Image 1 (cartoon, one colour):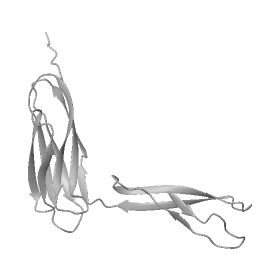
Image 2 (cartoon, one colour; image 1 turned 60 degrees about the vertical axis):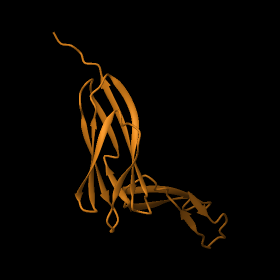
Image 3 (cartoon, one colour; image 1 turned 45 degrees about the vertical axis):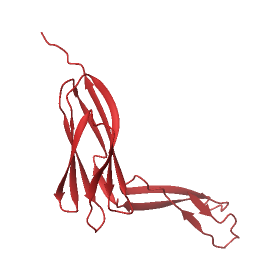
Image 4 (tube, one colour; image 1 turned 90 degrees about the vertical axis):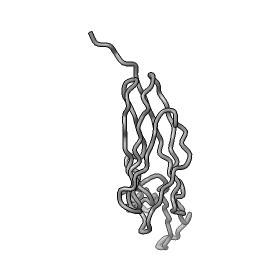
Length: 159
């Protein structure tokens, strides 16, 4: 989003304010903006913004994909890391796939790192989507949602 002085007198100065929405992003980002003027020498100037977004809480991976054959049990792990200098606590919140899979929260490094292990419950061929919400003690990020997708195909019989 750009905000700027609409008219600047010849030889004068103006202000340009650029903002970038960083929600859901982490790590290094860069954005460019073009500024057009009626200056014959520099009709267009490019401005660049670079930033490193340090997330309050990092999920790796941010989503869970469980793929396999019917009656198979598949397990996946999501790492949750604290991004602030204060200890993190996690508690289970809403979970809408209890008949499809189980989960377990393991604290690996006290107040800093957790692993959430998802294990599918063997069953018939099916596709499902859902989520696990985790409650935190961080006012900046009181809730984390881990999205889950499962797809289990019918077994093919070999001769």
